[in-house]
Image 1: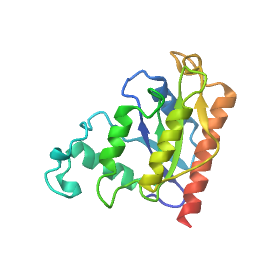
Image 2: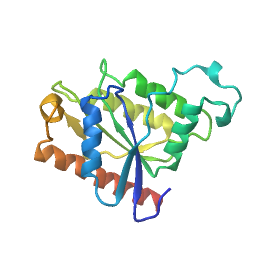
Image 3: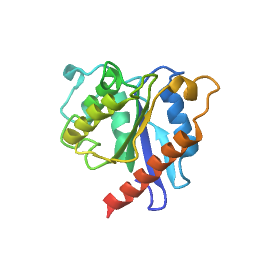
Image 4: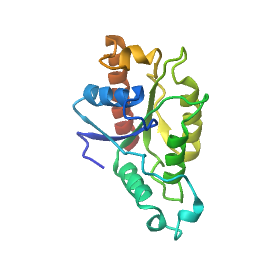
Length: 190
């Protein structure tokens, strides 16, 4: 955890594609983050498909190295940001897989963590269904998502496509969500 002056936020990006609109949204969020928020990514590309047989002993040390790294990055953060598309009205498999691995065992790193969720999609509803399902998962994870502002970017290719820039109102919404996450993190710290 960082000092009271800086909030360390680790992001899980729910798309593996290097040129995805959600990767670009994460990059814009890094640029828009307030000075007191340090936003980094915990990559999920190397996390294997969940298979209980890959756990060699019933402790974190018995998990694959990529899972151990993910768990340590999440544990070290003050807060978590999910940046994700919506696949088939829900959470992308790669993101759900990373959550499933990281949440194994009693001392998983999502417990009591402040969370924010944002996503971009070409559709008219943005990522509303994915965000709803992710909020449901946060109940089991004992994570604490902020409620507002919501960042549900529609028509994402226009704003986040090659050479695209976020509209000023959308950029401000992203910044406001990161400000709200920092305030929520400080509030939960007491």
